Length: 248
Image: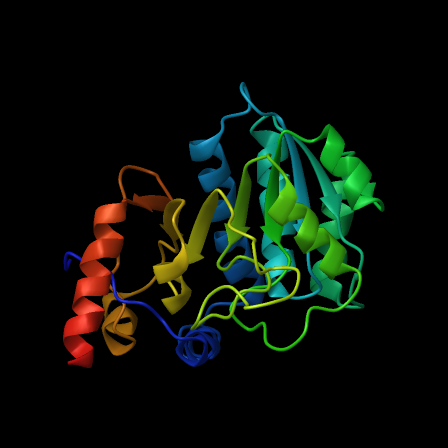
């Protein structure tokens, strides 16, 4: 593995997902389960349930939100006390089944994010992922503003919600000052990581070498049964040096 893991653009990430679900023979359910498992392990690494058991998980209407729903199930079994904010629930069998699984465990779904935030110990931001573009629409502007203002630790899934995958935080709007405590990059880091200063994990321990080579992904050296690998600031400095050299 190189000293600096290469990043994956939004287009390449979308192409990789499509290939994984075609020639790679993965189903969307499998990929979401693997992603959510990685998210849950990152939460555990940052703050185990003995220190911050109440986890508020903010889920968007797409696959990023689905990853958050899967993570919530695993966190429950790790002895956390998860609660779910899921204001835009799509009419989709996959997401509906994930909701049923959580309700069967007695995991609460909250409608008032701001009230729930006051009772939480930490937050998972699973609102928008690598496919996000355009304007943040209701009810999420106030949620992202609350995430930016909170003193609670926040772990973002694949991207801090409202950030551009290539250029990072927006110059204006609710995400302008949103800098989460931790980030888990799924499969590979995205170019926005050059703007991120917190704890950084990568998850996605399922790629074949052939697929990783095709998309220029450096698979980290996962340890034991871990589904996540923490990347230190030394990784970011090395990557930025490499990016500068490629640009010259």
